[in-house]
Every structure is written in C-alpha cells, then in structure tokens.
Image 1 (cartoon, rainbow, N blue to C red):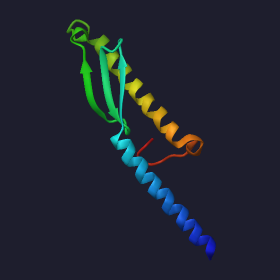
Image 2 (image 1 turned 180 degrees about the vertical axis):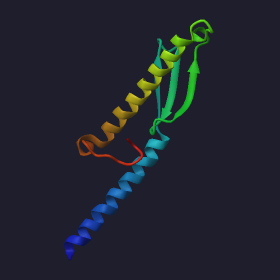
Image 3 (image 1 turned 30 degrees about the horizontal axis):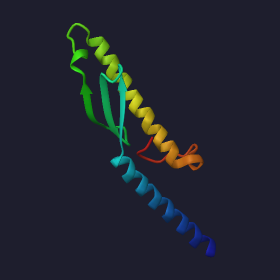
Image 4 (image 1 turned 120 degrees about the horizontal axis):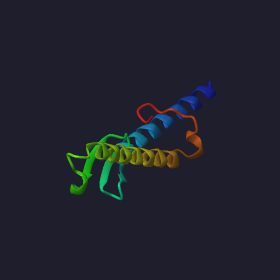
Amino acid sequence: MKGFGDMHKMLKQAQEMQARLQKEMAELRVEGSSGGGMVAVTVDGHKNVVALKLDPEVVSKDDVDMLQDLIVAALNDAAAKVDEHLAGKLGGLGAGLKIPGLG
C-alpha cells in the first residue's frame, strides 16, 4: 500500500505546482510590439490583452488595413513571448504536457 501513498503525494505536489504556475501566469505581463514600437500590446500569461498602445501616427482612417496588421503582429509577438516564458518555466518536464488553461 506504500505505493499508493507515494502516488498520492506526487499527485498532490503536481496539483500544487499547477496552482502556483497558474497564479504566476495570471500575474505575468508581457509586451509585444510591431511597427518599430508604434503598436504595443500587453498580455498576461494566459494571453489575455490587458493593454494596447497605439502611436497616433499609425491611426489613419485612410489606412485601417495597416493598423489592423500591426495590431495582429503585436498580439502574435506577445503570445510568442508568453509561450517562451512558459517553455522556460517548464523546461524539459513540460514537453508535450498539456496543462488546462495554459494551452
């Protein structure tokens, strides 16, 4: 029966680690940018947008398509940085691991 106690302990530790990681990701702030910084997006570790900054020079009713492209690029940049941060936190242990709420 000792094996069950060890497994229970490991599962509890994994749950605690997941809870700590979830909290850290919620508190994380990462900025992505595009257009040489003319568009900047700040996201949390769950990739929720928490701030958007636009340089007034990119706001033109004559070139809405460019502004949309810059926003998408900044969002993608921020999302990639979140992924890099998470990969660094999990290291080799997280390869192929799907943690609910982080994928």
